[in-house]
Length: 51
Image 1: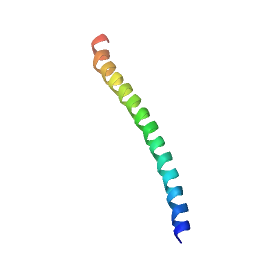
Image 2: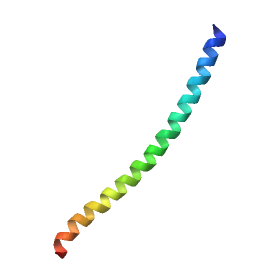
Image 3: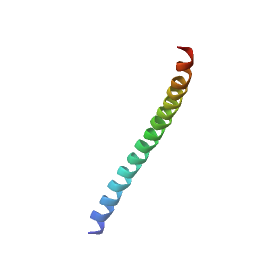
Image 4: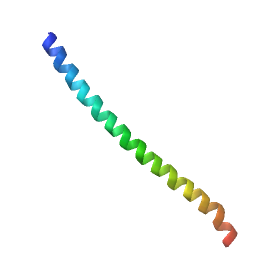
């Protein structure tokens, strides 16, 4: 039983590590999306003045 618990814990540790890596990738993508959104908002404010 302890051996099975150890195997489950190792599996969970691996999954949690992979989830952490995915979260870091998502954070990066979300930062980039935020930058794009701010750029788009700036363009939307500036364009009406040029038309």
